Length: 456
Image 1 (tube, rainbow, N blue to C red):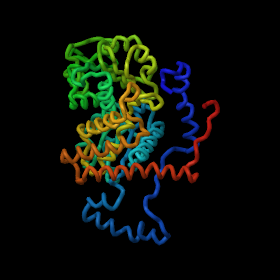
Image 2 (cartoon, helix red, strand yellow):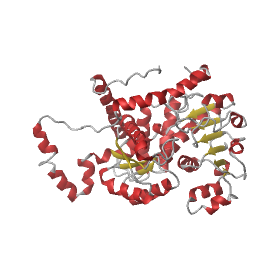
Image 3 (cartoon, rainbow, N blue to C red):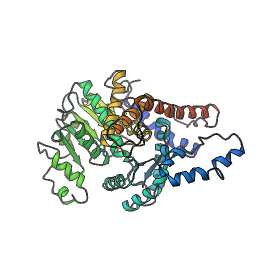
């Protein structure tokens, strides 16, 4: 049923459902991720091959040629999901233990949507240099590192150093992952309303990791920086912000954006930033009510609103529609147009790992954006459908192919594969993960989730 056909009470009840189910379901399963075997065990004699004494021979071979670790172990498909719990969803600094359910959820999505073996690792330190050192220490076991829910500005520093100091892909999903999906949504939403990416005016609410990365990716994709109005807690970014200039050594990213965006020199607060813009992307504080209906009403005709804060968007989607927005997206799967990094990172890492790429570039993220956009476009764009949903699993395969091809084009892939080979590998691994889960459910090893009293 389309959202506009539901009453406000029904929509609010729908929005509350995940929160009510989550504690009981998590308690029932005692977590949602664990490791599993991928090799055959035909008899106990096989342990002499998989473990001692047989395992000593691949160890010797790897010692002579370390690159063979990708051939003889699962390193090629292992990703560490690393967080210090300082910026978890819209909850803030809740610590490593409280952040673990999110990292387990990330590992689940990596496996089910991307066929990637991901491992949640929450660290009992907030020190950026200790985080960097820890990741470097554990890196030999992994083919990639996914940084997650780390507060700014240290998240920029951590990412920058690890990308320089490790020979495996390191990315911060709150930055590049979110940016790639948001760009895909923007591309298609502009097609629906008949506007040009290079001509429209943007209001960007929040100058955290996600929006800093979004602007960088948008500029690379052709957006004019001067037509972007950004706002933080103190107001619109502009060259006259003395507080930003004074803090430029600690947060050079924000000062750089203050200097290159907002060509008209607009000043004021959030409502002034939103006025007369075509596209608003907000990744700020969890709502509702952070963004007012009357502010959306002052946007240009056929406005596009992406309010992606989690767990609750800055403005309810039906309120943005009532205010005149034509296309509305949120970060939630229970509303139309989910603009969420879950649509990006499984496929992007799949393609990265399948060519053993040395890093993940912005151009690879943009290639994923266009793959996401094209997947939806082929099915027919609508106001309530500008990006695919997560159950359209071909989108992850398409992303993997696009990312792998771009990595080879940029000369950062250690393995050369054809487009057909990349598609076959991604289809096999992603399809296999989904089938494995279904088999375990059918056999009763994964039991159905419990009913929760008072929730339909």
